[in-house]
Structure formats: structure tokens, C-alpha cells
Figure 1 (cartoon, helix red, strand yellow):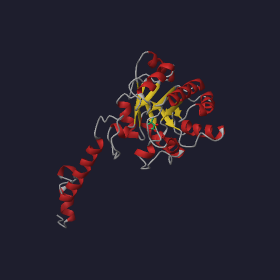
Figure 2 (cartoon, protein in one colour; figure 1 turned 90 degrees about the vertical axis):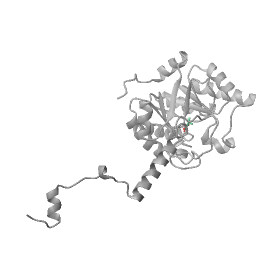
Figure 3 (cartoon, rainbow, N blue to C red; figure 1 turned 120 degrees about the vertical axis):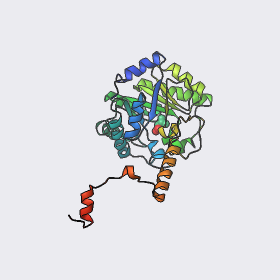
Figure 4 (cartoon, protein in one colour; figure 1 turned 45 degrees about the vertical axis):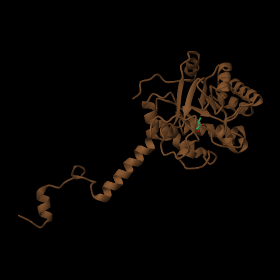
Length: 284
Ligand code: KIV
């Protein structure tokens, strides 16, 4: 059992003030969450990247609220002492406030998340405000927002021009003002991420946004090269090659089954000698 002090949104703000980096990773199930907690990760995100790396979709758009609730429950069972954030999936927070809050309630009450994450800037600030006023901590997410991939025209670096950079800073400030306790900056230039991070009193969590963010997040399957077949991306560093280890293990198992090497005597169970004699019709 992890004996670390429970992480809170206030503590994350203090970490920013103290220059202590926040570590975040995605996880989608019990074993990965358990390993993340054992590794001392600060925050686990049950991201809608679930759609790409676990469910086999080619975007996050098909991921449903039911999917996130289901996976958040298993993550919480694996990492009960870690601060767990659940993603609000595509189009679950752009309708009525009642509809949005009903979704948030499911993530908190059924999923047992501690916070929710929403993609978008100033245009969703009033929604963020309503959710935080309902007592639910919110993380914002700006820059490359995968739920808007078709509008953005692909997965590309955001905020390169001065107008885009200014707009992203305004978005970040609007989210802070609305009560967000942190903001994910995805695929923005290092210079812009540094500028936004300096301007905000809440922490920024970067992915593909350079070292000046107050914390970093990566997708579990990317940083461990776990089953991912996607081309290497510049902003991802692989710390282990789990996919290769698993593939080699499975191939060795299949070979040994085919050759009769597995199961060996050490994996088998035996009857008492007199029962064998009895079954052989060898009655005394
Ligand atoms: O869904 C996700 O994994 C995310 C991270 C990339 C921040 O939103």
C-alpha cells in the first residue's frame, strides 16, 4: 500500500510555486494503474486516448462516456492512493449544462474519479465554471485538442503564429479564471508553453510542449512502447519496450506448446500411486 500523502489540487499549485514537477501518465486498467502508483506517478489520466491505444480506433471520437466510466473504475481499483482524472469524451460537454453535469456525475460517482478533463479554451469557460462550482476539480486542455482533429486539419503543432499564440494564452487565462486547477498544453511550441506557464498561477502539464511546463504527461502505451504500431513521434521518449517483451514471451510460449516442451514436469500435478494402480485395474 502506497503511504504517500494524498495529492490535492492545492498541493499541485504549491508544487508549481516550489518548482517541483508534476508527473502524469495515462492508464486504462487495473494492472497499468497499479504499476503507475507503485512507480510514484502523481496523477493518472484515464484519457480518451483509450480509443487509439486500447480500443483500436483511429481517433478519440468514438470513445463514449460508458467506456471512460468502465475504465476509470478499474484504474481506481488499481491506484486508490493516486489522484485520478477522467476525460470527458467527445461531445459530452457541448450540449445543455444538465447533460454535461449528468456526465460529470457519472465519472465521479460511478467511475470514482477525483477530477475531470475537458478539451477547449475560452469557448468552454462557462462550462468549466459550472463544473467547478458544482465542486468538481477540472483540468483544461488546449493546443492540439484531438477531439477537434477534423477542425484542426490533423495532428500538428499549435500556436506557431503570433495570433494563434495570443489566442492560446487567452484561452489558458479564461480557463484559469473559470476555476480550472491545471491545464494540459498539447503540442505547442516550447516558447509558447513557457510563456503560458509563467503567466498562470495554476500548473501547466505539457505533452510535446517542452520542458518549461510545470508537469509532463505521456500516454502509457507510448512511453513503454506497449503494442503501439504508430510511427515514432518526436515528443515521445520510450523508457521501455514492453510490446517487444510481450511479443517475444508469447512467441516462446507458442513454440514450447507446439514442441511439447510446455508444460514440463514442474508444471504438472500427480495422483497417488495406489489410485493409479486402481485405475489400471490392478486391485490388491
Ligand atoms: O487522452 C489523453 O491521453 C490525453 C493526453 C494526451 C493529455 O488527453
